[in-house]
Length: 518
Image 1 (spheres, one colour):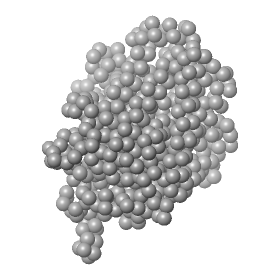
Image 2: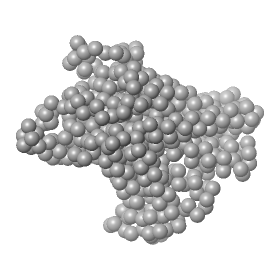
Image 3: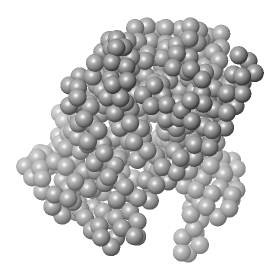
Image 4: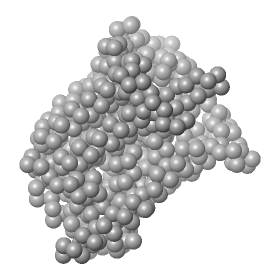
């Protein structure tokens, strides 16, 4: 299988002359920051506080996320400098192991990771736009839900339509060239970073609540109704206990492991700058630096944002905020009812900038796969602006389908409710994403053994200890998720494994084309 795609190790570099090298260090850092900051930081604190049960647990969760994410970014820098080509992590896995492993990552990225995140961010954009314009409602139907069996449906609400229009608009803008794409990214990332800084300053200095500060920080580790966590499958319940943060050391390990799902997802996409390496002016230096700087900036802001929440509200209030909208509740403390509108504007700006970065970067992976004969051939071409326009279009079409598809639930009373398919898919692949991250960082050790003679412009900081820290910690989190989030872990693995027959088809097709067109 590893040999079925011909001599692709240098294929990417050979076909990258059409890209425009327009991304500098500041631009790259803005892509990292902009892709990472979406809407998660404004809501996940509620769930994390319920899982860990204490204000100290909430802050420690973000410290652990920061250590994990920064150690991963510092480690990835070596691979980014070693392979400064379009495709990023796809290329790293391909070179460390085989084309199969690169394809399985690229397949999952296109099917769910990148596109599902884009869909979620687009609908989040529409949801908060609906705060300002109530006509943008999930229950105002253009096409009423049409059932596709008992569990799925397809529909088009005004909210869905606005999300789709956002995707089409940003996709079109990015087909006009990387200069426009990076300009949009720089403007919107600067605006939302300033908005997040504003939230932090307001929470810590203006909305500070002496009672909340005393309760949260004088009793940092006192538990308040920690969530009980059940084993993730019936067959596990006989020998794995129900636990909470109050259940001792094992309970704390499980609580913090499960809590990492929300925080790591909110801090994800730091690796997206690697996808665009062919367009970075000085890729051997700036891709690694952008990852490190962007990640440090975001993690610092995320931690301070949670400090701001704890300065304005007692932990019990954070745990019970309606719809988990912690940031909106914090601004409501400061500004009253107007706080919801202010927060909506901040999230609208944040989600627009986030999706611009995700859309810009994600299409470069499809391009790299196509150049290797592992995706639709047209996605491996550049338009006259030097960008993979076809890959952008394919990505936009699939995101649109994900937004249109709904999950269908019928309760005991026969009431039908509809969810979003992409939310389920994203829950499924959290476990798989961690597997790919761990494999990629193990790839640093593999490549040092396989190619010791290759020049490494940047070497992983703290090697071998920093990469090993991530590998051990991420593996422990995966172990916890496998036991206590089993219902989402195994479907994620299934999605990845579905790529195996697809890989065989693409690689055979690529081999035939190579034989016919030597």
